Length: 452
Image 1 (cartoon, rainbow, N blue to C red):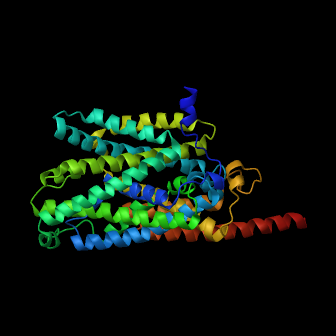
Image 2 (image 1 turned 90 degrees about the vertical axis):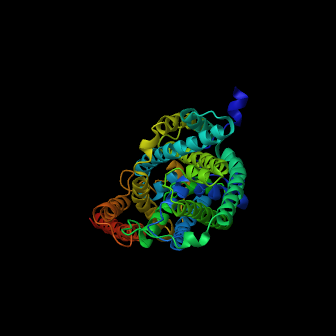
Image 3 (image 1 turned 180 degrees about the horizontal axis):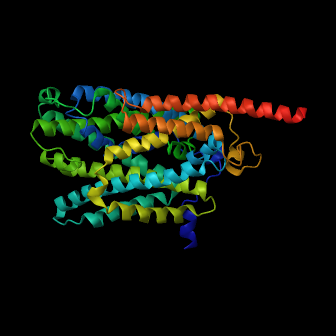
């Protein structure tokens, strides 16, 4: 038993030394290919049509992915520079105690994200087994999927790195097989000329906003993996290329499958395996979906665990992973109820995440000028990030105002151009301004006390 425990992951929130940063370019690339090549990304691509055309969908996918990957790569660089997990890094901007709220929220959101994806994987696993043997049990296969996820996660970053190298390669090969089959078996011209919705809910700009929001949903996790990268520059490039490639393939596959299904007069569904089964290669699609969920849920569970450790740093990594894994299994058994508000869930995540990480990026690159003390962030030995009783008022005021801005222009009075990019810049600018104002005010107060 002791020998088994010694092989399990003992990942923690301490800054990694250079010797501990062992993941090379291909490892980081594989992690981010596997991260965004996921069923929910494919599903989102499916639902872009017929509100916009297939060619417009490809344009928006490329633009949104290329732009959305920039802040992910920049945030990943902070992780490589400091050797710290994402939620621990938020202490630098929000304060030692101020980071606890984002960390707790992140744990809950990532568990919810795992619920949705685990159910989708259960459907795909069930389809594959039923196709081969005639046996069907969605609940069982949902549980088995998450059991595999937990098995990968309890080995820590070693388990993630090893699994993603295999999974990302397999998914890319299988997805290109699906693309080839689709575009040789069906009329591409009919797909391009697909009749659009008369009253579209998703415009080109809104679709762009959704693709960008998908990118921001990974901001809370990027440092958890990139802190293990051997090189800052290599990690950034690998993250950017891996994310953009996976995003374009996954969104594009969804758009192609959804579009061809409409051309053939089929009803769209949230399960692409059903659609691809009608095209004759549902088994391959089921394998792709299953692998994509295993890879992404392993990352989600790992990051949820690291966020939990930010709040309770003395807990055991692998034991917490098992407990959180059991919770994700229980939630996944809610089944169809999880899919009712899928798009709302994605946008809600973006609303919560964008201000947080716009503030962190502004703090690191502009306010602190890329000068973080990793040891003090992790252990609070010098008090550099205590601010006011452990909370940084500038960060919290900027966050509340920016979140209110995002909520208002997402749900109350939606903007024709979307709110994601605007929220990002509003959050960052507000934080920089408030940091300077509050710092100047504290300096003046200190001078006044000394004069007295």
